[in-house]
Length: 274
Image (cartoon, rainbow, N blue to C red; front, side):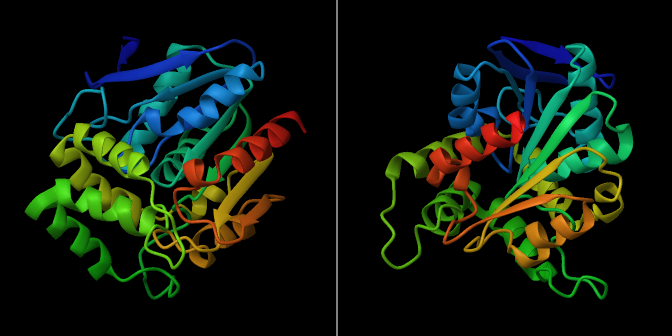
């Protein structure tokens, strides 16, 4: 397996396919690099080098007790780019991974980055606060934490069979394969790491990070996203990032990397090549 060791001794797994301009993917909670495989195989087949890592504590990476927060996630991403000496990279972040990309640019700048994309992403801030009244109440995230401690295997099954892919909507045709795929990825994550990540993706404010974006940026969000509602996320992010391009997918759920993979693949390729 391809791995590197971060400065705090955490072993990070990554996959590295194809050749050409590097495209780097950051995944959502509680998933891993495999969640991007539809985009990776498509873009690698289109002449690009595609790279995705398992965030610390997720998938095949080691499971440190500490460092399960956005600053460290972003620093791990920076060390991946440094380890591979990537230049002119395109960074795509899905959900929690969008926060990782935003914090990376906020902390490390864009010297290695040509373009960026936020896909169903959590920025600028998921949590409802006085300054962010459109966010979700803390009780939503407390509920996730309680369910994780009570029976996280069932939690992942419930999320995947319900709101993540929109399978709880009238007329939806659930895919047992997608449900099982989400559950399997989730169960490879460390329990403590996935638990801590709930706070990281919900309570981190990326407003100032988004203001530092100075590369072409694509924002993609489904208007039927039940996990990360579009108004407080994709639409708000597109307002904060200078000259961002916003694509709204009508009727699309949070997990559009799978449910709308053909549309997303075409849009990502067009954005990279523009």
